[in-house]
Length: 422
Image (cartoon, rainbow, N blue to C red):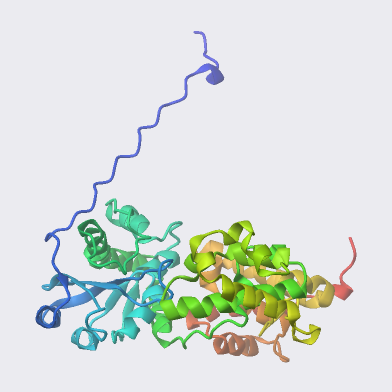
């Protein structure tokens, strides 16, 4: 009996993955709530509902300077869904109070809590489906990905970057927004069951509590240094131009409530810094300054550039950014080889634990905390001191329990100066 060479056999054809059904609204599209009587009805409906409340908010990122909510979506068992326009009201604290005792299910809570608080809606208990997905090791934790993977529905994505400050909001946008809370309750329940099966439910509870207890984020120093394309800026004088243009643009953007990039793109700021024009005509001839927005404020841009050009050297920004912690890790090998060795050992140990528990490393322990521990470890580098250090840097009990021992060993790594050269 002759045998066929396996390499000559045709490859097996895999069946294509079945198309997921498109998620649709169960109750149809409700009217946008933008009057006092309609809001009163919604408040009563959600006060009398049962169970957790799915909550979402839409902002106008990329269009507006502010991060305010331009639409708030809610869904609750026995209450149905509601689309609330916060702009006519300004304050939605009565709505927040009506559901204050319920758990709020929010996808990526850190993105929405600030704008919800701005309109008076502050939860006491949250369930973050995105964070829970990370704890479970899902490779993609966007809402559409989790709904598809866990619940088997395909969600619409076409209006995720829409200008939600538009009025009136188009019906297709409203359908998209309403769908964001359509399956959140079912998703939450399915994910909780999975967390419990994997022994990660207590981790999730601690993470959700930490979201609510986290202090307000401090503004980062020198925000102008995050201008896209800064790698092209070579000297301190050019940095001063970037700073002056960025600050001038920011003032205009805040006053007009327009996204800064729509007034003057980052590319224009960097081009001006690189070209260092000596007069207004030269500035406005630069390619990136030929847009309508740039021309509208040309006098302001030139005054900013001219001011930066005339600054004394003592007032120029430093070449590198300011740090409130350790320097960039890439500089450690030269500045402190022992700290570099500790950091390498700590990162490897935490990465191994994260992989064993199917966790993103950054969700097991903050990279900033690891850097700070490696750069300036406690004087008594024992388990108790390391655990205290981690807790002072906002690590949760479950994180400390998994990492404190290996980090204690890591910071006791033999000094690099005593290591044999291979």
